[in-house]
Image (cartoon, rainbow, N blue to C red; front, side, top):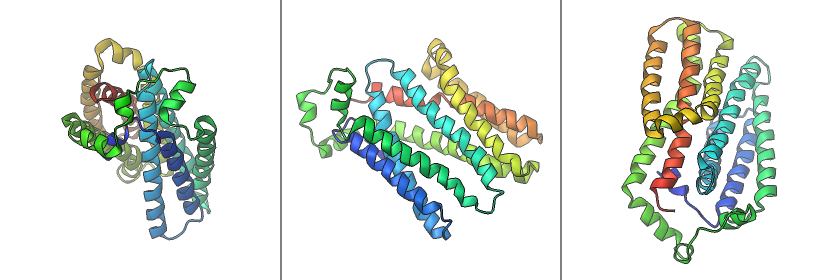
Amino acid sequence: MWYVAMCTPDPCIEIRMFSGALLQVAAYTMQVPAGPFPEFAVSFTIAGFGICMQSAQANAFLGGLPKDTALKLSLLHAAYGLGAFSGPLAATYFSAQTHWSYHYLINLTLAVMNFVLLTAVFRLKGQEAALQDAGYESTTTAAESNTGRGSQYSTILGIRAVYFLAAFVLVYDGVEVTLGGWIVTFIIRERAGGPSSGYISSGFFGGLTLGRLVLLSLNKLIGETRAITLYAVVCIALEATVWAVPNLIENAVAVSTIGLLMGPMYPIMVGQTSKILPR
């Protein structure tokens, strides 16, 4: 729910994105030396917090754009999917190496690049200033600009839709991350997939990336609400086949297809949020 609440325009939105990127740099720096498990637990907590801050503010920024919002959100989350697709490929390679933790050098390099690009593009400007620089007119009223953050959060927490949206985010993210990660363990243990099982995770996130790009027209044709319902039903059916069919190839294809159909769900949710909630 805090994540949904953060997806609101804020004068400090780019500072939060900047801070989120900096937290990720710190976290991945801690992970490269392969320290003790408690250090990893702390570093992943820091990384998760930074990712949450940056993702929430990026969604808020794009969700507030007056033109081509659905397309831009889909491109944003397709970029996430592309990174998630590449991650298991690198992790699968490094898992067989002596210095397996050097995998996190890739994360660290990307986090540093992200930090530099955010700083160069936004230069710590507020959302309204950044939108005006991009040629958009300000849509914030004087009353909104004078509203304190405490009052804004009170208003947000008083909106019933926020709780439903938060529940959707919780379930969706839980399913996506669990399936994209735990499927590797499942394939190794239950299907004797071996060290190459990590590639199935890449198939899932590759499908996720494609779904956020190629299904845009279909979503618009059948309606976004119907699309999410239809995709969810098919995903559940396909997941049942993964459990019931002891065939590695079928499981890999099913998981990739689930990724394809789950892909549009999150961008659609963010787009609907920008329509349902007050600015």
